[in-house]
Structures are given as C-alpha cells and as structure tokens.
Amino acid sequence: MAAGATLSVLLLVAGVVLMLVLHVVVVFWALRRGVFLRGAFRVEERRDQRAAGLTPDEIAVLPCHERKEDGGGGGRGECAVCLEAFQAGDRCRVLPRCEHGFHARCVDSWLRQSRVCPICRAEVEVSGYAGKPAAAVAEASQATTLEIVTERLGGTER
Image (cartoon, rainbow, N blue to C red):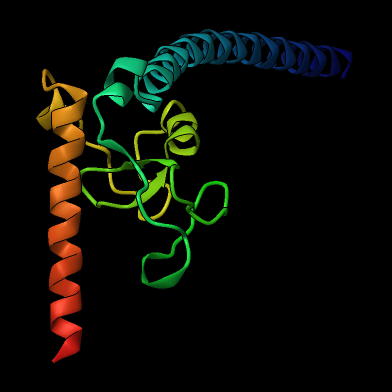
C-alpha cells in the first residue's frame, strides 16, 4: 500500500507542476500579446488625435464674416457653443456643409478639438475652400446664406 500511496502523491505533484507550467506559459503569452495589442491601439489613438481636429490653416479658410445686424428682431440667434446672442459687429463663422453659424472664436476652439459641427455633427469639409482667399470664401458663404434666408422669407409670406 505504501507503493500505491507514493505513486498517487507523485502523480498529484506531477499534475500540479504541469498545471503551474501551463499557467505560466498562458499568462506569459497573454501578457506578451496584450503588450503588442496595446501598442497597436496607441498608434491608432495617435492617428485619431491627429485627425480629431482641424489645423489652424484649415480653420482659416472656413467662411467668416462680420455680423451686420443686431441680435434682436427677425435675424436673432445665438451661438450654440457659448450660448450668447449674436450682436452687430460679431465675427461669425458659417460651417460650409450644414451652414450653422457661430462666433468665430467659439467655433474655432471647438474645431481644433473636433472635425464636426457642434449642432448636427456633420463633418466639416474644408476641401472646397482650399486655395481660395478668405474674403472670397466669406463673400460666397454670405451670398448663399442670404439666398437661403430670402427663400425662407418668400415661402412664409404667401
């Protein structure tokens, strides 16, 4: 019986050692794989951070104009970033795709962090404005905005 008990103890010890070795191998493999994956995610995060906001050059070509009418009356509105009403003389920026307007200083700080409109989340496209002088971009944007306002007023007066 002593031989049977000794054999059982040896098999038990061998099984425990085998399980420990297997555990160490699996943990080592998981840690090594995890380090490589975290490194890949870090590279992806850096790409996302670079692509997160617009560059100052891209922001500079977006339409910007000085507000001509006061915030009261029919042309009233407020900046969705700072929640202040637009006033005559405010520098305003109109985003090209969705045509939402904001104070230039407010939306510029937003656009340095994100490439989307703060209101509708439409991606801000600057490709159509690249290479154009800022005055021409602002004039084209203002003409488009005036045309849209005219259409809206014309449709409601009937």
